[in-house]
Image 1 (tube, rainbow, N blue to C red):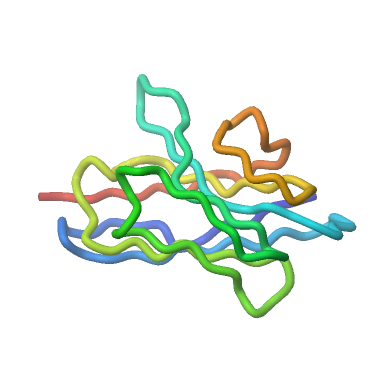
Image 2 (image 1 turned 45 degrees about the vertical axis):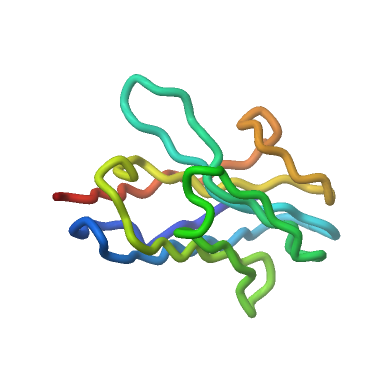
Length: 123
């Protein structure tokens, strides 16, 4: 299984970015995909995850209302729309995936990780 993420970059506070991720290689019958992020010195934290079959979602409380995770029209594709970005959103964002329908908010629940994409929000 490979996860290919794209869409990171630099933006000023209050701006928006959209991340995308596509999973290939897996015989997924049911899959959860989403995003974690990490800043230096901190553990990776969940941003948002979605069950691609059912559409159920989980958001980190600090991001809900600003970030929206959605399913793409292509199979096993997910998007993260990030609005009203803040400097504290600066991090490396990782696409993740797991088989099954259970949504986990723990990084240990996801065996598949993308390469990470940098998001930098300046003041």
